[in-house]
Image (cartoon, rainbow over all chains, first blue to last red; front, side):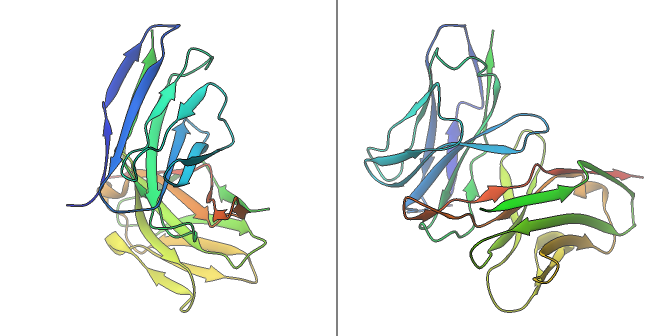
Length: 113
Length: 116
């Protein structure tokens, strides 16, 4: 079955550590996105990528970094510069850049201890 | 600029009652509109979408929504609520062009509570 996988499901990090969240898709979609979700705040866009080796900052990119070396993969690194990283992180993809529906992964819950 | 307003962060209904979740949008381009559902600790799943054509759109799990351009609305309805409908619902609109791409704009979500 085609879809998006995110790993791990739960992640714990000590303050001052960088951590990388994995996102893989086998839908052959061009575009991929990272969102952060906090209670009552909906989805906030961190980064997005429309093609390999290219990505754009979203609304809350500070303290995060991404790469897009392969079409299928779009990992997100939460750096120590992110002051409040505890949140639920969602990866999504769309078939192209035309504004069609997004397909979401199951999410990763990051907790900073 | 694009925006989405979901009226009511929480909506409570009895099992078997009508479900109505409200969504109003603004868009500077012809709107594509979406409703997604999210169960606890899971990703979002598409319920239904409007792009062009028929303004009454039917989705999964018995949900439907009507695009009303004059009212800039895309409210989600279901005739009879089930306990399994309890979840968070998000309305989204195709966003404006940024770097040659349409980036969606999401509402803040409405939590649907279903009482037995």
